[in-house]
Amino acid sequence: MVDVILGLQWGDEGKGKIVDFVAPNYDIVARFQGGPNAGHTLYVEGKKVVLHQVPSGVFHEKTINLIGSGVVLDPITLRKECNTVTEFGVNLKKQLFISERTHLILPTHRALDKATEISKGNEKIGSTLKGIGPTYMDKTGRNGLRVGDILDKNFTTAYIKLRLKHQRILDSYGFNEDISTWEEEFFEDLEFLRKLNIVNGEYFINNGITAGKKVLAEGAQGSMLDIDFGTFPFVTSSSTISSGVCSGLGVAPQKIREVLGVTKAYCTRVGSGPFPTELENETGELLRKIGSEFGATTGRPRRCGWIDLVALKFACMINGVTKIVMTKADILDSFETLQMCTAYQIDNKRVEEIPFQMTRLNIKPEYQSFAGWNTDTTAITSEKKLPESMQRYVAFINQYLGVKVKYISNGPGREQLIELA
Image (cartoon, rainbow, N blue to C red):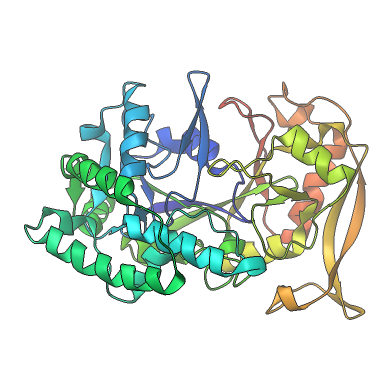
């Protein structure tokens, strides 16, 4: 069977730590979508490690890691990550596998990403400029090159053909930056990629399931960035929700068992787009400062606000979430009063549903206030020792969502995770 871990907000919920924590319970950890625009932060041997392409189970010796077909892969980023993880003694030949159907991010995809984002002016969507969108566009346009293609003797010819197509588009944007260095790196790192375990990912994972292996599907970004159900057009280019596991790994829906949804105890967003509970004041600045809210991939300051239960309930619904992990609860330790958004005010009407197009509406969050716990919770290891006010905070979330918080993360360390009854 397959369990899923994914984000319930706009990404950056702390999924990497949770995958790292539960990975020893699984035989296979598989990434099913996204690309190097997603940074999963882990702490290994006291050192901070950010993974963008490699699944977060890679630091567990007995865990196999698969980069699935729904991912878009940058060979340059992959090579750098592999160099990092091998410094910790990871045996890549034993632990890392890549689906041959995984699409490749080319240097011209990165150039196209930059050119199109510049052309939008003030209407930028906040792209990380990693080439994700253009790669997915080539995938749906049936033009893309895949990992399995690099084993074909005609790969260079196919590459040149696609590059010329991209160059015509770049010319139309007036983009003339030199990307020769990117191309040199790309072809050097393709040689590295060829030496890794390239497999027929769908048979690989289904054969594992048939053999009784336990699989954990690791999502990137967050549900509110889903290409279909997120805050369009300020979204990513892949399916970030649980249904994306089926298309991204090639597994049937009935194989999915548990869906663990990860949310912060508050809310953040990187880049442009609607964010109803955003706090553009001292409170927002304090959340950013205490929570070190800066993008793991870009370093950009994250926009911060109170937890949005309207959006969270929507995310739980479309994902079929069975358990919730609430991260960074300790960041709220210093606040005397906390707020939760329980509804939106739109055109003087109270709304508890996510509207079709949030960018066209003036949305005012309706808040419910809670007393903060105003105490350091980072050393707490059991539910019984949690402050009563934190327990009330969690109980209200459970009641509103109809799904229970199963774990509370109260710090970045692996051991700082409290299981709730």
